[in-house]
Image 1 (spheres, rainbow, N blue to C red):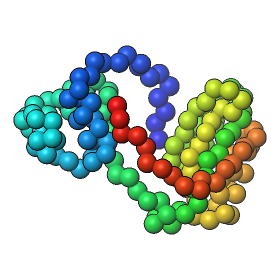
Image 2 (cartoon, rainbow, N blue to C red; image 1 turned 180 degrees about the vertical axis):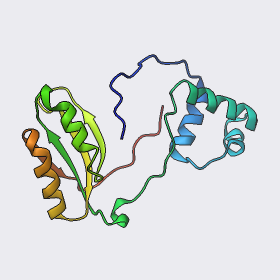
Image 3 (cartoon, rainbow, N blue to C red; image 1 turned 135 degrees about the vertical axis):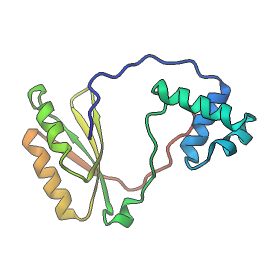
Length: 154
């Protein structure tokens, strides 16, 4: 797991076609360049060039599959908030990188320092994860009852 400590915030101008290409990739990631081209009225080479530009400029940061973790034996979905000190941040990040059940890590402002999205196989494993994180400070854990689709508008 990598941690971007310095993220460049410079935005690049996107036209309507770029935004539509991004929306299509976000909602239907397996579409090929020709299929995207048909939907945005561009040739496959023109779409490929736009996608390459979006990748080169860091707008598209990667590709992946959405996975149902319940079917992978991790039916318990929870979020955990950790309140810690600045001195513990690096060590906490090192620990998080060793816990495969943690699928997202967010550094926060406010009282809590981290928000962790995790998927555990059972309550005992969730307890063990929470206990290991708690060495860095108070942990608040909430079970996720339902997840709704993320927006694909850009």
